[in-house]
Image (cartoon, rainbow, N blue to C red):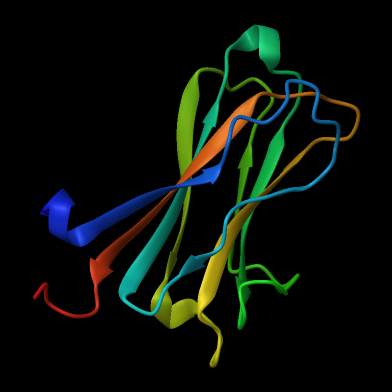
Length: 131
């Protein structure tokens, strides 16, 4: 069981994206995994009036928090019929490539569609006990 105040760190991944985000990749905020063993990006999708197509959500890694790899560690597709929900895409630290320290969620709507979505980063299972 996680004690939220000690074991889980939340941060904004992607703020609410514009309703008509058309097939353009939206990059989330990079997080430093040096002190945590697990990362999850929770992607929230809005209701049917803002939902026009599928979303592809991936987790990318980086050595410097600026140049992220196009070889993704995890992928989640949220179907176009899914509304008013939150789904997560997750990675464990041991899945990261040697020398890589940062992760971020990237979301791409299907071509020709507009969607309203956001994401929240969650880092959990600290590598070291709280002091």
